[in-house]
Image (cartoon, rainbow, N blue to C red; front, side, top):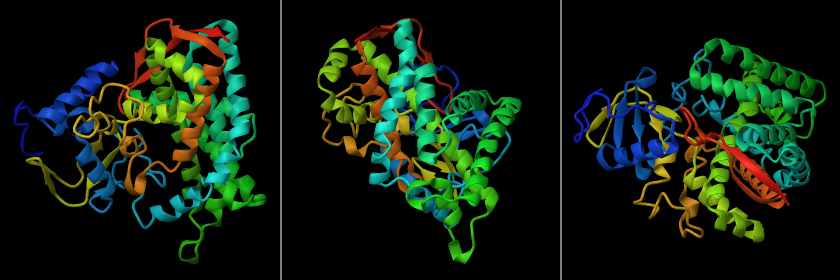
Length: 400
């Protein structure tokens, strides 16, 4: 590491674990954007953080310089495992993304809308009958499992198993609990291996089945490595389970405190897609997605060397007032809302964007349709690194 923050002069410019309260995290990033846009922390083995929108977007779009094959998340998997496509660079990355993208076209995603509506209704019902519950840890954790199960064409019995192990795996990752990470990751690997075996015996059309699409890939005329296919599907099992509970929890907290907006969205559901984009900007849950540099880079007077992790703080970038005026405020109809980075940018942008949008809109629309009002009913818990947002949001629900 070389250089120091001109305003602090400290070896460590910030401590990402100082507070899990989202308000504190956003305040920390606001300070970094103003005083130290390329900041260093000794936490999690040491890493840099880019906090300004322009720097984050540029790095995300420069896959030759900011590579993913060394570190893709801070903190990283405590076992050091690497799975495609997130942990791969081109050209190895390309056939995996091509295979997954093939299954996420508009018609395929649209066909999932009706079954997902039914799953949302069913998963919300227990909370409505009780008059409330933890919207993030219950509804927000269980419904996304159905999104993944429908996309991967898994059996319905898989959904509760996936919800259980994915949530516990995520918590173990955040706490760097190697033993628990191994246990719950192993169960998801079992699901992925069984899925690959099933599709080897009886493949489905590649346009609607990710496992069949991966198995059909032939880069250079050679099939993808079978364990690579298993790893990619294992990643698919969990990527759609991390962010939705946090985003939904954060949105519900916001709406519980802003009853006028809650009422407006309930009465005018046609506004939900536009509102969701602003919620995605405001409550982007990612602060730990990372790269390393292929060659030494100097930015804002700081020198970053190959091998040193660099987090692209999307949550900070999306609250950069230089791009989004009044950045900490919900504003319907922002003229440049399409520029938000909630799903990343460049080669490693979120492959599941259309599926994630559908899932979040379905979950929120169902909640608003089936309630007259919801209010906070306890303390909100913030997410640990590598995320930011609300991971536990107790609500009192008044059924419609």
